[in-house]
Image (cartoon, rainbow, N blue to C red; front, side, top):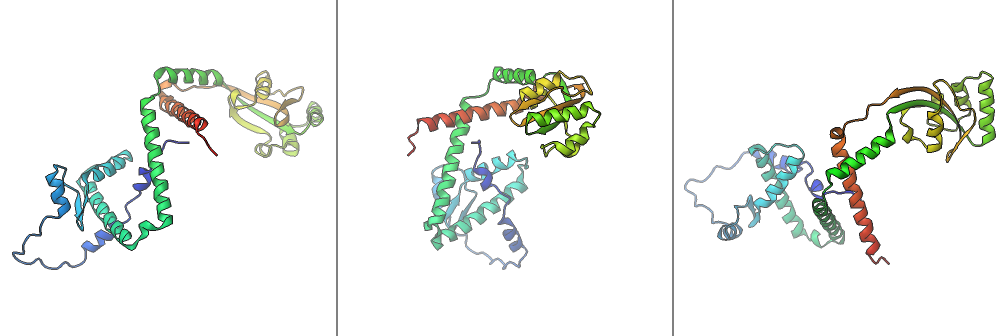
Length: 290
């Protein structure tokens, strides 16, 4: 389960502003001279009386609160969008258009539709779940010590060398022994791999597995691989959960392991995700599910 916010869905690229912008190009009726100013809308009066911030707009008597604008703008800033007057003007138009359409949807009775109510219930649940997980993560931050521990563990598992190997994977030990016999007679490893290997991902490349650290392979495979000299192949079949392998080591090189500052953010995210997963599993274990 992942930390996420339903706000992302709410902040899709504005779809209604363009309609509003198009209307601006249409001829507008001339303003009447000395026309009396319209009376303040009840919602605006109530907001002013309560000392609340001036609403973004009042649509058919319904105030669009400033807090909604600020929330939307905060989400947009998180996506790298600028917070300037032009952006706020566009966002105001979007909020007004949404309110106009939402009011029409309410009048049409769509809010009573079982499908719409189900979607609204799901959206409410997603918002609540996201808010809870974000709040929990904020109260249980990942420490520098945890990051260092995970970094040291990864570094130890990776080691300081990369290996470029190739292999031929077959079903049983006898097949693997027969391949080793052919290699001893001078057969070419890549040709035997193309002919006999059942590893579809590497057979067409002559069994080439590209550069990898030992931890990328099953332990039985990596243990046999690191013992080989360059250009040599295993004298006996190597068994893993996939079958039987004949392995040849093509090359070895030093690997540059990134410094902790380069990967700190990624490690932090991984640890936080692991903690959230554990939280959800714990809550699920305590829940009565019938």
